[in-house]
Amino acid sequence: MRMISTLSLVALGGAIGASVRYVFGVAAMRITGPTEFPFAILSINVIGSFLMGVFVIAAAHRGLTHFSPFVMTGLLGGFTTFSAFSLETVNLMERGQIGSAAAYVALSVGLSIFGLMLGLWLARGVFI
Image 1 (cartoon, rainbow, N blue to C red):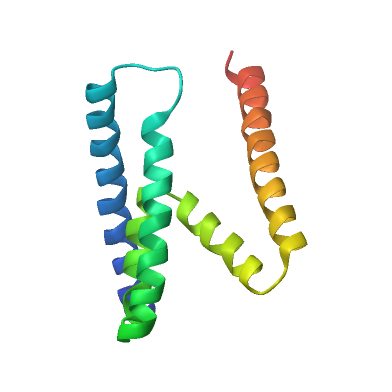
Image 2 (tube, rainbow, N blue to C red):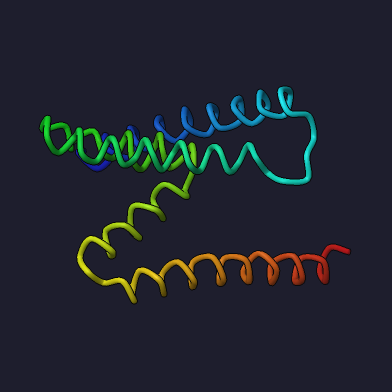
């Protein structure tokens, strides 16, 4: 039963986070107009990473880590998955695993871009 409750909190947070990301993106486009550089997404990623950093420390110091599934996985994960990536990178760095952190960053970015390109290529072959 606890798993269902936690899953519900993650789903609720994800719905809220994704909705906020959408509204933020629309607002940014209205303010800046269409641009070639994705300023809205960059801003969302930086804000989400900042908020994750604040929450990790605040939750640990105030005994609120039980809100992590809702806030970190759901809300901030729905707002931006980049915040979780940033947290894992900093965790590796703080443990002194600089090489692993660099490899994680390079592999995450490089392989994710490759995965997207592969998906585009395969989908174009199937649907176009």
